[in-house]
Amino acid sequence: MPIVDMKGMLEHAYQYGYAVGAFDVVSLDFVTGIMTAAERSRSPVILSLAESHFAHFDFELLMSAVERAAQRATVPVAIHLDHGMSTKSAVQAISLGCNGVMVDASHHPFEENVRLTLGVTGMAHSCGIPVEGELGYVPGVEGEDAEHHPGDLVYTSVSEAKEYVQRTGVDFLAVSIGTVHGRMKGEPSLNYSRLEEINKTLGIPLVLHGGTGLTDEQYSRLINNGISKINYYTALADASGKRVQQNTQSDGQGYTALVDGVAESIADEAERCMHLWGSAGQADNALKNCASWAPVEHLIVYNADANETKVHAMMSEGRRVLSQIPGVRTVFTGNAIQEGAQYRFSWLVRFCHPAVIDSYRDHPDHIAFADNQFRPIAGDRISIDYRAVESGRTHSENSASIRKSA
Image (cartoon, rainbow, N blue to C red; front, top):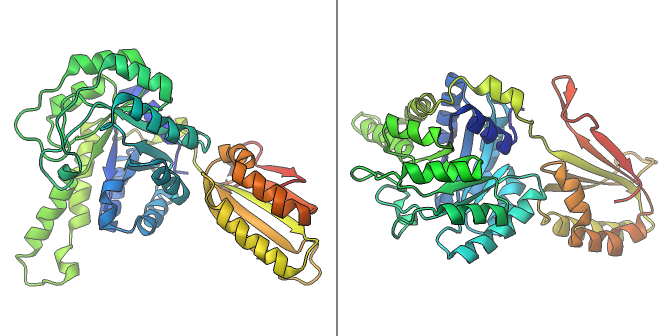
């Protein structure tokens, strides 16, 4: 802890009538600023990484920093893939540490949206990962991210929302009720009655995309009608950009001088939102009500009825095949250092969630590899699944299970 189950986090927000900010990060300054705000305001927070921003940073490298920041926090944190474009994107995000994913298929016709979303929910739920879907269309107007959302506003239909949630099994629904991506031009025409009806019909946490530029009263009415997650980026980008512009007026023109104070500017804007949306002060209650999020270590120690060259070839193929299975974060293979060890070889496969124990075992790629390459030469083996023990307690009552099979 404090990386927590995102579904539990948003259900807590939905139950107690506040919204959690899902702040898109594009650099370490964003990570630092957002987490500073969350700690100062004692707020749950979602660190969000949008696929539309991947051109601006190395996803894998930034995810390492995001996950570490979340692990050392004292407030509940979830890590989310925003606007994922495919099942492949979602699988990669999960393998890198996201514990929530969004499939962005709202620009497709309804049936195609359902089909694409189902592909993600089936995979993600087998990994214990909640999924956000989107119905209706939130366009972009102006701002850094607006060009990624061309087209006209399409409001979410109540009847289609009900059918979409029933058929896809999404855990949260992003709705289109009059907001835009980027900066708001003029006064938005927010359809509160539509939102209220969707909320009464679905009874699940709803998501607002295009959260920048609304008034305090508008946010309050949206949250009172089921909005439990608010995506937020443009105002953070504007605040950081303004700080850089101010820094250009100083004598120092090097990189560090230009970005001085950027993280603090981001923190101030994010903290303002946390207080406005009611999440400030909710951290401790959310921690009590949200399950912790910790990986599972799938350990196999074994002896092989084959020479070392053949064993290493089998290991190499296993690393390639098994690392592609959804929910698998890393695959380690090793030789015993000590001469005469009881078991000479090992596998250590890290799963993102206990649900992966079953989905991994039943995955056709695992079955084919285990039956055709591993088990025929590794009859003497022990398999154990572990979860980490932290702060004197386990993450589950039964943290280890021992099996004589892979």
